[in-house]
Length: 214
Image (cartoon, rainbow, N blue to C red):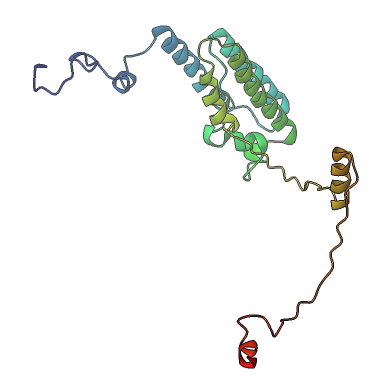
């Protein structure tokens, strides 16, 4: 196999025993053990936490600090999905709950005071991603994906159109005449034209009347 007529190009990366990137990504065993362990421990802790009383601003604030301590202890970067789990709020509507949009302003008994805690924590995560992106020398682009998903960042190009309503001013004919008078070093001579009326002479050769008189 692999010889002439097999259809496989010489030097092809798709050799027997090799896998494509999509195949590797779909392999459940293709993981980094330490990362997987940290994620599972972190997830188990969040899974076992009961949501705080969202109407109690002190309980909401206390849960925020608990969430940050759990992240720090397990060496896991604070994520929006993790924060939503810590407050027992579905990730699909978490942003709406934080900002009180789409009828979520009183979700779970949430008060304006407790929402301000959620909003402050949520926006801290935005700062964290921006800070991490600025200081990541290996792959800062990965944070752009997170910010697009969770904070509404978009790729945008702004086009600015400026209408200039300025027309070039042309010099008057008098100014042009004066300019060339100065260049020539002598005044411009004025040429007077006289209109002369021309009357046909009946004796002009070739005229039919002159021929008839002869």
